[in-house]
Every structure is written in structure tokens, then in C-alpha cells.
Amino acid sequence: MTEPRQNTLHSLSLTRNVFLYVPNIIGYLRILFLLIAIATMQSYYTVCSFCYGLCVALDMVDGFAARTFNQSSRFGALLDMLTDRCGTMALLHTLGIFYPSYSFFFSLSSIIDISMHWIHCHVSVVKGQISHKTGMKDSTITPFILRYYYENKSFLTFMCFINEVFYSSLYMSHFTTGRFYIFYILSVVAFPFAMFKSVLALLQGYVAAMKVVEIDIKERHTQ
Image (cartoon, rainbow, N blue to C red; front, top):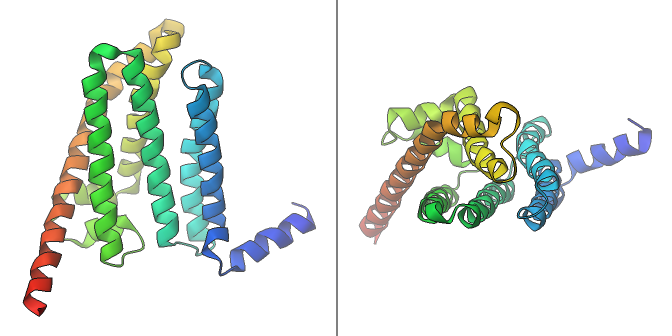
């Protein structure tokens, strides 16, 4: 790495401007790639797949950068969450166009994904937690499987990955079956995991709703 780049990276790692945190800059790049993917999603599947794949891959990079430079932030967590949700929503919207007979299923999946993550993230902000994952690990009302999901990074990564594989395989199957019908096979294999992830999202929303009620009760007692 050249000296000017090293100096730039060093200055960004020391900045107090949250908007210029290294993981948040990576987040802006994710948005750029996502916009390109959305613009090409219905016609140019190679460009879309490349940009969407980069957006997903950078999701892991920004987390690594946040830990490396000690630049975790609530803004970064929200940016990361919104980018993930918008990417999934755009893909599901397109799948609803490609497979109109299953549009209800894709709409329902999108509603569950967005609403459950939103209420969970909102509760995390209200409780002053930097990461929405912390509350799930510490909460006594969190079901075991959901706590395990957030505590075991390998399991969490696998579930997120296989969920993307399912919807991405359906997307690719609209354009090509792939060699040996690989995209069809992947979609069949990944389907139960994608459904299980929706169940986890519903559990996540349930726990978040319980926490909102707890906050309401505490506020009533302090009045």
C-alpha cells in the first residue's frame, strides 16, 4: 500500500466524524453496488449478480473493519441493517415479477423480514445498545435457538448465506438453469433453511415486542 493511502486510512481510523468511519464508508459502497444491482436486476443478470454479490460480501468486510478500527456505531448498525433489508426487498420484488404465481409468498417474506428486523432494531436503539445482537444474547426472554443464532457466529453466517443462496438461485433460474440444473438444485436444498430463517425473524420480532411492553410497564411505574 502506498504512503498516501496509508496516511488516508490512518486519518480515517482516527476520525471522530461518524459519517467517515471506515466501516460506514464501506457501507456507502454497498449502497452504490446495490443501486447498480437493482437498476440491472430485471434485464442484465450478470451485472446484477456481480454487484449484488459485492454488496453481500462487503457486509462481512464492514463488520471486520468496525472491530479492527474500533469504530462500531449506532449509525453504522442502522446503515448496515437498512442496506440488507432494502437489498432483500428489491430481490423479492423482482422475484414476484418473475414468478407471479408465488408473489404472495415473496411479499409475505419481505414483510416478515422488514417488519421483524425493524422492531428489533428500534428496540435496540431505545435501549441504547450499539449492536442489535447484544440484546438477544443477554435477554432472558430470548428462546434458546434465537440466542444460539446470535451467539454462534458460524451459524449466523451460514443462515444468512444460505438464505441469500435460496433467493439468488431462484433469481438465476429465471435466466438460466446453469450446468446440471445447479440453480434449481440449490434453490431446493436451501428452501428449508430460508423458511427456518423466517421463523427466526418472527421469533426476533416476538422478543422485541416483549421488550417494548417491558419498557411501557417500567415507564408507567415511574410516572
